[in-house]
Amino acid sequence: MKKMLLCLLPLVLIILSNVEQVQGISAVDLSALREIKNSLTDISSSSPNPFFTTWDFTTSDPCSTFAGITCSSSIPKRVTTLNLGTGLSDSPGLAGTLSPAISNLSELTQLILFTGIVTGPIPSQLGTLKKLSIISLANNRLTGSIPGSIFSLPNLHTLDLSHNQLTGTIPGSISALSDLKVVILGSNKLSGVIPQLPAELLHLDLSNNEFSGMLPKRMPLTLRYLSVLGNSLWGPLNTLESLSELVYLDLSMNRFSGPIPTSLFRATLSSMFLQRNNFTGGVPQLPPTSSLYGPGSTVDLSHNYLTGELTNTLTGVETLFLNNNMFTGAVPRDYVESVYSGNTKTLYLQHNYIAEFPVVEGLALPDSVALCLSYNCMVPPVPVLEFMACPASAGDMISRPVNQCSAFNTSMA
Image (cartoon, rainbow, N blue to C red; front, side, top):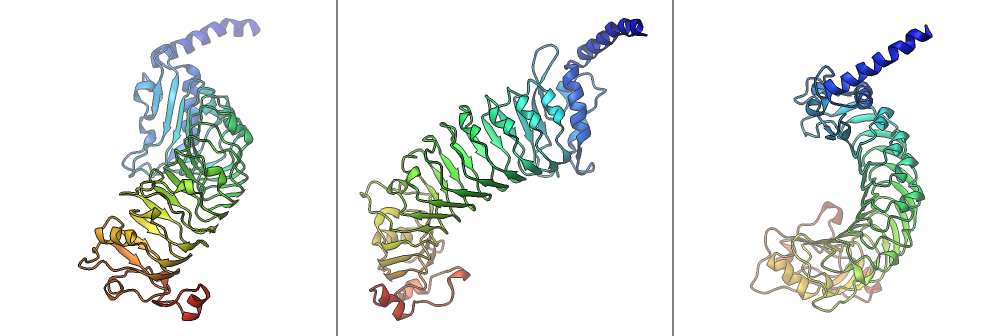
């Protein structure tokens, strides 16, 4: 019997070799693709674009016929990219689980799972795929923690695991990934502190999780996009003062406190969301040419404890929310002229202690402008009052009670 098996072994190897030659793909990769298909299924086989329709294992060359597969030019061919699902808006996506057999695709550089209802854990075996540069498994129902092995992948550039049900923490080993540029982990149930990050990270989205503590002491100077909205983070923002490359910042709905760094008030940081925190102090006065906001810019400082008179710094911001603070004095005329010219399309100043909104004679407010001045220490001018469009949350009261304004040494205008 043993001799018979030894005699059959060369025949088996020849058959496997022939399979590779006929199908053009490594037998190991072909077997892995079978297991991957067995663990996943199209949510609806009657949908316009069922993904697995093309995965016919009797085909002559899966590398040229399987949807979502790209292979190397070597012989035998090896799978280098695996895009599971169509990614089309009219496709409901895939269900099932991710097979650990993905790790047998040893030449894989890109793994993408499009929107669906895939459940279960992320296979820890992905950490063996040393050539992986992109992992995107967003908008599914994956559970468990992020395998620590992923944070040892030397070539990892992009990690997107957002909109799942992942728990646990981010391991400190992430800081050693020198090639990692994009991390998107928003809308999960991750917790703990944010560890030290890779030095050349460009994009970080940790929004809508359960992170706590302060921001890392040393933030990547290369960051252009930073969102941590909807967590339980606290402390001052002095770690952000040197981030001169930022163009998008969202720290809203946390417990940050202290003054807002002056360096954040600049035209290049055209989207800044700091609402619903505990910030104090005011908006700094910058030289006239230091802040030239323009079309598309948004600044939201609402629902904080900011005080003092408004400065000209935020002149020209297209969408500006300063409501629910403790600002006093008159609205700068530059703001008013920006509203009348249509450069500022939204200006919310309700629920402050503002005493004056200058009127620009001879001009009418554009219909495209959303302006709210209610519940301040003034009665808005008639032309403005007739035009105002406030959100329902502003309430019905046009002005504050006199005694509240007296407490801020502000008389009703």
